[in-house]
Amino acid sequence: MKKKAIIGSIITLAILLWLLVKVDYGQLWAALRRANYWYVLPYLVFVWFSMPLRAWRWQLLLKPLGRVPFWRSYASTMIGFMANNVLPARLGEVVRAYSLGARTGISRSALFGTIIVERIYDSLTLLVILWVVFLFSKAANSTEAAAIKSFGYIFLAATVILLLFLIFLQRKTEATLYWLGRLMRWLPGGIRTRGREVIEKFARGLTIAPGVSATLGIIFYSILLWVMMAASSYLIFSAFGYSLSPVSGSRYLPMEATFVVLVVVSLAITVPSTPGYFGVFHAGVVLALKVYLNLPPKQFLGEAAAIAIVLHAAQYVPITLLGVYHLKTEHLKFRTTGGKIDIEPEQPEPVSGESH
Image 1 (tube, rainbow, N blue to C red):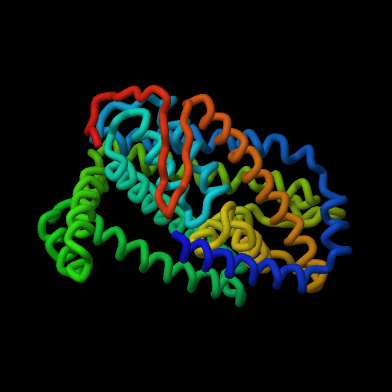
Image 2: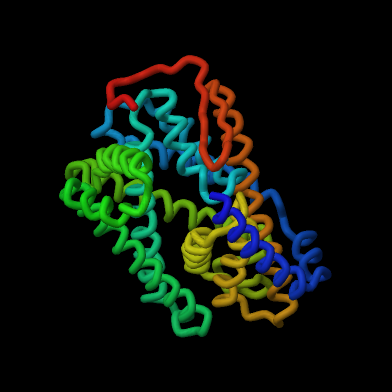
């Protein structure tokens, strides 16, 4: 975890320094002053509503592990996303599994398996959106779009490799554990034994396709979630004076730009960074907008940086505050010591499922 945190900090610092050197602060300040922040308020509603959608989708993945009340899955989702904003190395994914495990008694490793599967659905949905948009886009042949598509191909290859590994782990668990054991034979015996136990529990949470109806539900929620988040992002562009219609006196930005921004940012935040994705989030917005905003370099960077700052803040602040609130209402405490996470519930409430 420490190595990831250090690498993430270096990458974030490099990106931020690049932005700080390149950006024209006069243009940045002018864009921020010109913005109509009333548009941000309805966007906050969409940001919040995305979390219950995630919780409903997660419940479909959790079915094989036991019955989990919606409120529990929703609270843990909020806690996990908040933790991603304040902890390094995307530890929020682990915190999310730990928080639900602490309250339900379900194996944390199995819960983490469902989160990995959820991330695969997200990745594939986003990549499909990207290629559908570029299939019909007039801007698909630009230099920046080509770079985005190349990054997308790399991410797709990584996702497919991970998916194949997980399918093999689910269906051929013993064979996979055998080969993993061979790869880990240089480790001390106690660590190998513990590692095997964790991976076995993790494999129990791997239900790539939990029945036809549940799988269709997961796909539906995934599409709904990302289409809603992309479309609602236009509220932030509207705050900066952009319009869907290229009419006289308005600045035109097509709706497809919001989808490209969403996908590029989602890919960018997979790069190691500091908590809250500072730097990589903003760089993703700037790269995506370069496809669409035909402005002089200084004006473009100031405008794009301003949009990135507001878009990031509109997601970071409410999710962090709501996550802290649910951490308190769930009576949970978490701390990290020596790279390990410890979550302490005041009164555990087990449900039907696997104990850990």
